[in-house]
Image 1 (tube, rainbow, N blue to C red):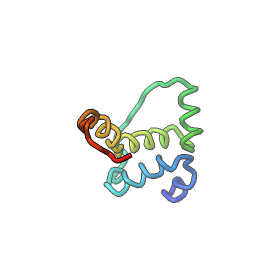
Image 2: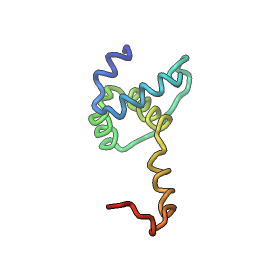
Image 3: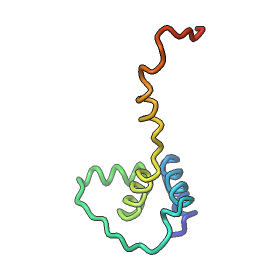
Image 4: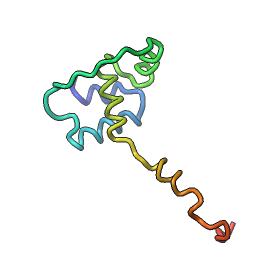
Length: 93
């Protein structure tokens, strides 16, 4: 399926962005030679496919991997900053 059709079918802008970033970083280039397998609970797969808009399990796995590979670490960084600003700092509000 062409990428433009897949992008239009995705339910989550976050997943669309993950695929776009993965594509821009050449993570989706080349032949599909890697086999990824796993048995998952049916309810988990159905819900993930519904939320993501994926039409096949292969597409679902690609979306999941792209999401992990392009994840923003801002949340981890923000949490790591806890306690680094003095309680005495006047924030003027």
